[in-house]
Length: 79
Image (tube, rainbow, N blue to C red; front, side, top):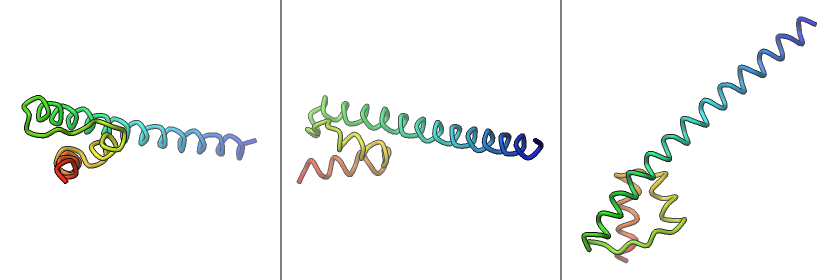
């Protein structure tokens, strides 16, 4: 009976850690996406670039963030 309680406790601890890390990664991706889309929207509004917002560009901005993703998307749109 004690082994079952220990196993249940370990499963709960691992589940809590997985959920906590998943939410942290989702928060990081959401903040990168919002900041990158604001910059791309501003650059499109000012007429500096004409980047189409599609799923691929959204994923590049979300993973790369502002320094990587936005500049990569802008460079790809200029090609």
